[in-house]
Image 1: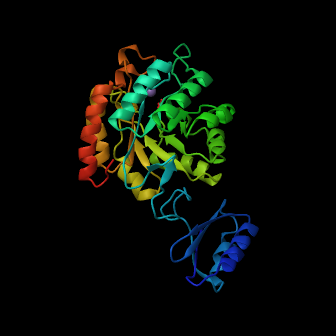
Image 2 (image 1 turned 45 degrees about the horizontal axis):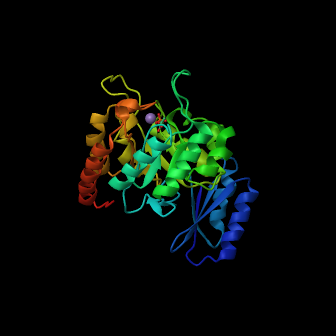
Image 3 (image 1 turned 135 degrees about the vertical axis):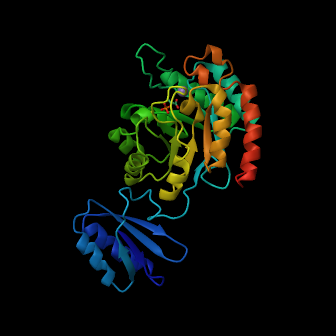
Amino acid sequence: MIIVMQEKATRRDVEDVEERVKGFGYNAKILEGTVRTVIAAIGDGRDKAQLQALESLVHVESVTPILKPYKLCSLEVKNTPTVINVKGVTIGGDKLVVMAGPCSVEGEEQLMKTGEACKAAGAHILRGGAFKPRTSPYSFQGMEEDGLKILRSVSDQTGMPIVTEVMNPRDTDLIYKYADIMQIGARNVQNFSLLKEMGKLDKPILLKRGLATTIDEWLMSAEYILSEGNDQVILCERGIRTFETATRNTLDLSAIPVVKEKSHLPIIIDPSHGCGYWQYVHPMSLAAVAAGADGLMVEVHWKPEEAFSDGPQSLKPGKFDILMQDIKKIADAVGRPI
Ligand code: PEP
Ligand code: MN
């Protein structure tokens, strides 16, 4: 339920309603607007009538149900875009953000060479996996803590914050120590215990869409994180499974306007996993920016032919540099400068 307070309501009035909401067994999320305060009452829907009756209080203007199954990430609860600040880089604000780097951290030289090239081309955030979700147990699984240390050192030297994946609740504390943004991969989008762990953190979470997840299911996964108290969630579309085999996945760019119509959370696009081939990364990146994405996540490798994972979809630094120049043109044209 959304409880809209009267314009003249005082802090004490808001606290009074908050206490009553909690007394009915709901969580109360206070959203201070410029004119009025709104209280989102989030719970399992029992005792709705009691909540509705709050409308009779003199400082309450209205009580209306939230129609969407996701609540805290819906525009009904918050109708201004969420802007996330990571060490001075903003995601979801006026500017477009580009995250770039290799699929996996493979060693110091690889990450430093790739990171420096990404930075020089204008990327804002460095990506790289230290814990890798691989289809085969015999494929490279990641450098784990050694990889995190390398990420941290390249981040310190280049000044780029880092985003890296957490696959298991038991690794949360370790990854939290090194990461600036915690990534939840496509395969874990409905790992609810992991999502709840992320909800308890005070760092941004990049939540990938699953291979076969509808947009509403994806938003419900985001809701798990927000409902635990962390509202710094970045959605990342990375392609879904369809019958098409010419590309690794089908990059669903229509998710951008759909998400924008439903949620205040920022959405970025990962054309690398979305397409699976480096040749398609450039055009799909431009299309994503034109369609209103808040940013991109692009795999770049200084020697893709030697990459331990996802070489075929990784751009060489020179190609990434050209991409960044073209992105700037589209970003300017849609009023989203880099
Ligand atoms: C990744 O970004 O490294 C990754 C494994 O992506 P996804 O979860 O989208 O497959
Ligand atoms: Mn990858």
